[in-house]
Length: 314
Ligand SMILES: Cc1cc2nc3c(=O)[nH]c(=O)nc-3n(C[C@H](O)[C@H](O)[C@H](O)COP(=O)(O)O)c2cc1C
Image (cartoon, rainbow, N blue to C red):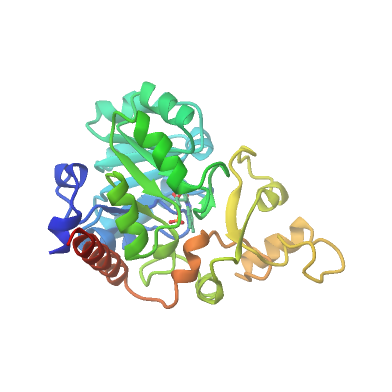
């Protein structure tokens, strides 16, 4: 029943049962999560983050078969020869490349019959992406987890982007309940691009300790920072900081005598210690209260959203 209530022209055009997409989260959205979200009726994506490579993509493809979607990071795709080509050759229905201003990948993706997708943070960015031939915009609000411009919260962003969009717009940032899903669909989004609420799902690649840190967090536990990228010397453009769980590395008042150096940070990452290591998470993290299969998350969000939209119409 929720399928009929929630479906949008865009989700119907792709034959999705429900208008939700799992965000291509590096280190979380591997082949297992993509396959689980697809089985739940949404669009399942594999994410290649900072550590993306052709080898890593092939490993996840071996798990997922042909995924619905593959997401790349602009500077990683530029550095890893053959990564974009390997993504195209895998034959997904959508490919996203985010966090860059170079749209030269768009014609290549579209020529293969694949929808070109990117995340935007304001109306000028949406205009630029549309002019470059992007097929689907993801309006990513600043409450979202992981990297992204810290500019507009999702609702004002959706207003700005939906006003000028000539292509479908997916909403991202802080969507982790039936309420928030219903809100963005009622506002006119073609679907929801879900990160944090699926990052700790059973099928995610996330480490056990990072999951536990997410379960212990509440909506106020995150912050936006470039500190990790600077310490790790990752070439993220500074306009794309990351929303992460606050920890001893992000909080200067956390009681440490001195700021941890990058060597200690690398050791904490190797040891999966979220007291220092980064855990990407958005403000919706407070809604992540236990570890469950991705299908349970998708079913709950969609069932609750459909119920809300139905009862509000009565
Ligand atoms: C753990 C995690 C990893 C992420 N990694 C990526 C990534 O590799 N590529 C990307 O385009 N977006 C990445 N994102 C951002 C998502 O695409 C999306 O903008 C965000 O998750 C939406 O907000 P939400 O987390 O509140 O749902 C990541 C998000 C999270 C939570």
